[in-house]
Image (cartoon, rainbow, N blue to C red; front, side, top):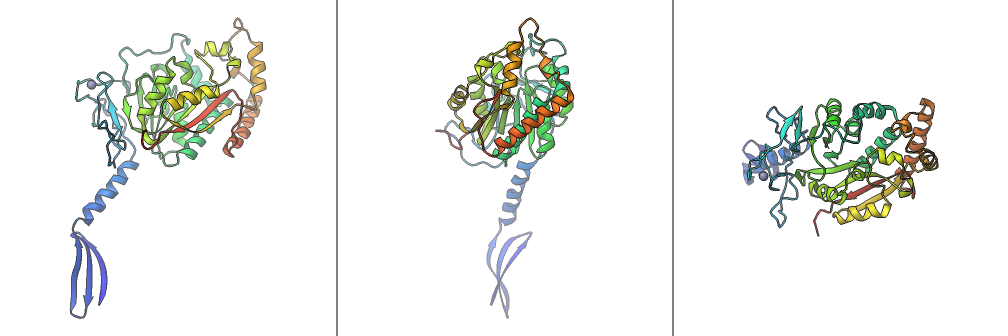
Length: 370
Ligand SMILES: [Zn+2]
């Protein structure tokens, strides 16, 4: 007698064979349904979110595959949309709140969550984002920061399927992620519509939101959330971090960059609308108080710190021009980019640099909240 395993449209069977023929030893009727469900859920988790439809409804928040519920009734494995009017979180294809009926408006291909959205910050001159978009393409600092972010995302969150950048500006960082990690579903938010015009052009397929980082309309939605040189612009940075925590999927995490060292405070910070430069301890404490666990914290722009100190000390408020720091010759720009590439190689090898113009922090949200 012999045994055989057969699958058919009717199910999975274990058969016994003998000279008299065969008989069914075990028959799992549900096998095909089970296989279809399992494969289907995998396929849905890896699918790319469709852009907003004409009605203004995004499809973000449709991740599948969940089991247990938190004590407050929310599901840790399933992302949810959150109504900013009544704070009700819900699973839905649309953005209309099932409790109060509120829904965001669609403006120029971007979902807007703000009542009276600003075009640009009062402190920035007209054309700021247009000039920024041009500088970012070639400037050593923006290019080096992009590579560091891409490395951190790929290295610390290798399985990430979704990435949300808060304060995405012109979309320069998101476009870099799109080119280097194309499997990741991308979303971005910005409070100023002037920046989102450039972001939409750079990222036609990403979900973009006009949103205040202090009110993030998601819960457990994203594998990774990034805020790159954003927190220093916001008075309630601790609130932003708590909102990022809520929007991060348990087991996911955040990437954050901020300007470092208070002694580097200069007219550049004032004209950049910064409210603070961080110390390492201050950033660490605020991130931990939001609920995250630090994975890594390192300085960067460390090898250029002496030049940065000289540059900022010799400039007075009277002769200040915001873009002067970026207006350098092409050869010098290339040299500085190579220096920062060498520095990144050190960081990738595990060296955490003690001082530098900026800080990079990588933290994770625990799988279960304490
Ligand atoms: Zn509501």
